[in-house]
Length: 399
Image (cartoon, rainbow, N blue to C red; front, side, top):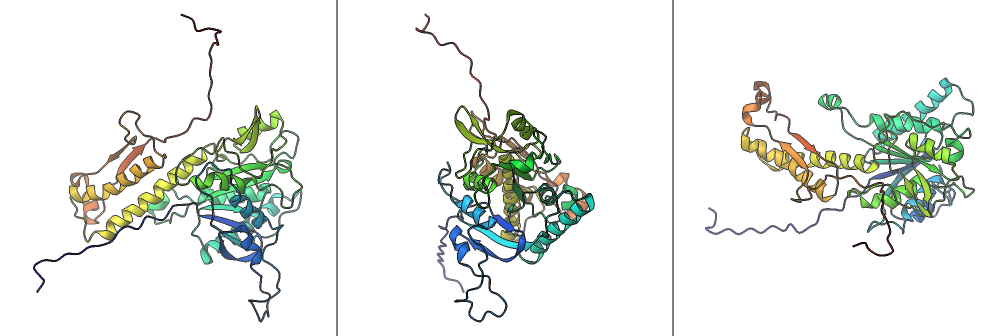
């Protein structure tokens, strides 16, 4: 028999873990086990144990990475962004290596290029299936047009369509950040050889300055390290100045060509250096894509929690409203993160949510215990990317 008075106190003071970009740095010239690094120089202390090594703790096997390794240079560039406007720095990345096959020779025909793309993608898909697929942003050591095209296609296909989701396709969407030196982007004097398919809206490309430093410029990694710490807060990727990169020597015609093809590059206007224009290859802004992906992931997680934390959700208007509340919670949080716009008068988020009623459910939906779709609509917060002023300066103010 229970006592007449029962008091139970639960403690729920733990804060939610801070959200951050899940980044994978992938070297493609050889297989290297997956590690998570919080310090770039830690990459230089992990030995690659050769077969027959009897003392892993004191062995003298070759290093996985050295000072000239592209992966090491990328992580270092990502971490060394003290000039970021964010209140924190990226301090956690996954790093691994795969055997992505050899780069095609100069002048390779379409068949050879296709084989090279397939070898690279097959190696990445094997890595995803057998090692790790719990990452969001991909950056590799590949800078050639053929590899960039293949990896952009991979990122594009990682976001399933609604029809694919309805057939059970998993949603493990990825973003791909790449770079190419000016010399590879402009094989000819002015015409860009890397005008990618506009559908590649999950890939962002950066033009790196031609550099003689080992590994060259790590523009893409520095860009991620400079703006990535804001996540999940939505900020424009334009007007940011990553540390440790140089201005590429671009003519006016080349700059115009890059903007037409939605390549990002470090520009200088009136002595002010910053990245232009913060876009994906399809012209969509990077912050919009990050924001939409965040909403998708957060809303999915909240909806799972609703079903898992309630013993039963009645097939009634009240039950439908309980599920719909999770959608509203995500959209409200998206307003906090400046992904969704806020009404200037009321301060409320500019979004609408249409919760279905029990009467709107079909017999098949009720029989299958399926909630009719919850429709919502929201306005991106956006950012100002340009400004014009026009005025008259008087020696004295006119009456």
